Structure formats: structure tokens, C-alpha cells
Length: 104
Image 1 (cartoon, rainbow, N blue to C red):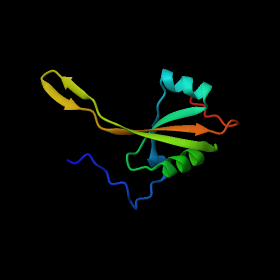
Image 2: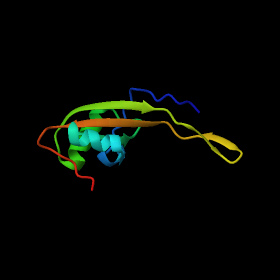
Image 3: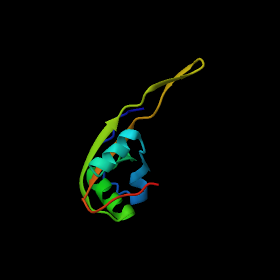
Image 4: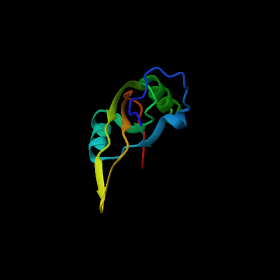
């Protein structure tokens, strides 16, 4: 099964399909309080424009910039079987100064 996903897709994703889940970690909470930047796991087909549109629609905030990272899956072992976790895409979204997202 190929791991490469083509960059040019004519597929339009709905906002709830773009954002899979927020990444609530210590590092992410530090970025949110200091830099007003939030991390999300997003669909591997989503572009930066898709992520920006989805965050603005779902959370009703103004997005300044979006950084994306393609993350590789890690090797995992269960008893005698070897496997891998799936590859995934991470988006770090920086918001305008007067906007916040409350996860809790």
C-alpha cells in the first residue's frame, strides 16, 4: 500500500472531516498560553487553506497562520507481532490576539 498521497486533490472536505482531534499535551498547552497557537490532528488530505477554514468555522475565531507537519508512524510490538501505527498529519494554528479556544 503506497504511503504517498497526491498533493493536488479535487476533494473538498467539510470542516468536521478536516479536524480529527485537538492535541492536548503539555507542550501544546504551553504554546496556547504563550503564543496563542493550538495543535490539531488533521486529515492527511487537508491543505493549510482547508485547516484555516475549518478552524474558523468550527471555533468562530480568526486564524493568522497554519503550520503543518506530516508525522511518520512508530513501530510497535504486541507480544510476538510487529506492526506500525499509522502516519498522520499535525497542524499548528496561530490565532489572532483577541481570540482563544477553550478545550476545558
